[in-house]
Amino acid sequence: MEQKNLPNLSKARKRLNNRVITSEYKPHKEIKGLGIGKKYLIQTHGCQANEADSEILRAMLEEQGFTLTDTVETADLILINTCAVRESAENKVFGELGRLKSYKKVNPDLILVVAGCMSQEEATVERILTKYRHVDIVLGTHNLHEFINYLYYVMTENKKLVEVYSEEGNIVENLPHARDNRFKAWVNIMYGCDEFCTYCIVPYTRGKERSRQKEYIIEEVEGLIAKGYKEITLLGQNVNSYGLDLEGDKYHFADLLEDLSNLDIPRIRFTTSHPKDFSDELIDVIARKQNVMPYIHLPVQSGSNAILKRMNRKYTKEDYLSLINKIYNRIPDVSLTTDIIVGFPGETESDFQETLDLVKKSRFEGAYTFVYSARKGTPAANYEVTLSKGEAKQRLYELNNLVNEGYAAGNKRFEGQIVKVLVEGMSKTKTDTLSGYTEHNKLVNFKGNESLIGKIIDIKILKAKTWSLDGEVI
Ligand code: 5AD
Ligand code: SF4
Image (cartoon, rainbow, N blue to C red):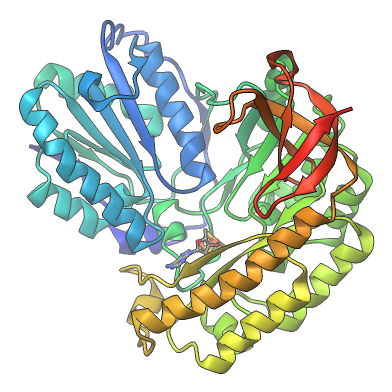
């Protein structure tokens, strides 16, 4: 086993004041055809940042001649793009790696690659090196652009490789993308996170906050428009702090959103926003611009001030409520969703009631809810957990019941209305039915033919269900 660079969480925690260097990706001219006649399978866990990274890794494999397969049995290369945000996500990956061991016995030439956030964790890589020795490449989040070099090395030298950089990371532009969707695209506007919420591993696995220069972002979006894309989602762990690290600190997220909204793209979304940086200018752009969708995902995490403080969220319940009231006043029909963690260390029954109270006051139309999961290396992992797993699950259950009421109400309000839907394809369950999403990000099913796919059309909503809407073409 050749080990080159192992992860180091304490190095990853450091934030140096150096300027981010931007370089441009050059396709590997000297390495050609590594994948001719070979198939790859890719599994993506976790958030949109991972989905976007998987599209880049896929494109690199396809440049080498690999073609996509969805069966393990036919794959010559399997890449697992992992998530480290909760233990359950990690367990899934270890389960999968265990399962793949037997395939490796049948096909010793099978190349197994672990990429993504788990690769950035010391304990995980140690476990792979000792218990999952059939993994061929461990690739970190900061060096995707080097993937083909590593693959070439492993394929020609017949060795294994761990290549993880723990330092800040720079930016590589002009990366190729094999986009999963023909009409909707992810566009990274920044990488990393400097927030250090005490429960979260992301600032360690994704490094320091780095904004892409606006010229590159605009160029990417113009390229997508030329290819017929109808919707872009701007990605960052905290898009609201876009530009704060750029030279001069004068061009911020609201400015970027305004500039992009002046391009000929019908729909712009963005995720994720941190409440502490949500500016009035940003609210104003969303309110004014027809092609900036009236949908905001605004993670609150908890409704208790004591817990928010211990989470290092830098706002209070009152700050959050006053921010969303400001948003509701300026954009009355906006659809808000959120993230909430229950069972954070020290969360008392009354803290939890504060969270329920906040949810009741917030008119959320959806929420991703989680039981707290201790992440090694984060400050909260050293806080004492007083709640049992059963009690935490009970809180999650209670919270979900409340959240689901908001979900249903958020759908109900569209009954009888005419809404715009970007038609994505045939419904997964019914063959004569199309589906797509509204501006407010509601899933709609309706009867229609395939020629509508990729178009934005008017649909009358006939009936709201809990998780989707039924409509008809008008
Ligand atoms: N435990 C549970 N949930 C977490 N999240 C992040 N870290 C943890 C953790 N350690 C949740 C937060 C975040 C979402 C992406 O995942 O709610 O907003
Ligand atoms: Fe994690 Fe907080 Fe950064 Fe979101 S803002 S990625 S929760 S540290």
